[in-house]
Image 1: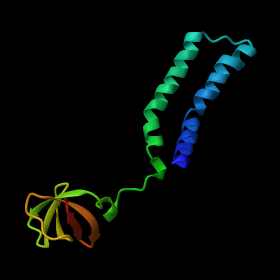
Image 2: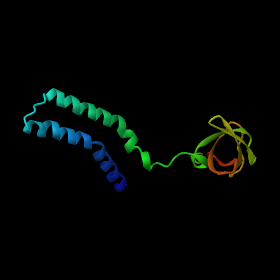
Image 3: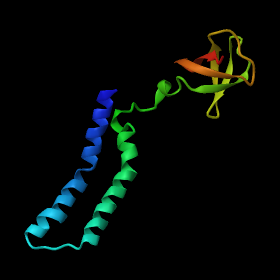
Image 4: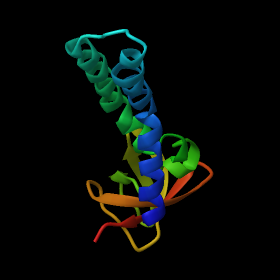
Length: 131
C-alpha cells in the first residue's frame, strides 16, 4: 500500500515538474536578469499548466502503464453474465450483447439469473451462480 502511494507521489511530482520549472523561471530567474513579467501573466501561465495536469492526472495516476491490458479471456473473468438458456450445467449466457456457451460449476442456473464468470476454456465460459 505504501509503495503504491509513494509511486503515485513520484508520478504526481513528475507530472508537476513543468509547473515547478516554469514557476522558478518566471518568478525567480527572469526578474533577476531584468525581465519583468506581469504577475497576472505568470499566474495565467501557471493556471493553464495546472489545468493541463488536472486533465491528465487521472490517466497517469489511474494506472496507465501499470494496468494490465484488458484483452483476451482475462477481461471476462469476474464479470457478470445473464443466463439466456438454462445452465444444467451447460447452456448459454449473454455478456455485452454476445452469446457464450457456458457451464455452471455450482449446480444449475435458470434463464434470467445472473452468473459470475470464473474462467474461460476455449469458446466456453465457466460460471458460478451468484448467491
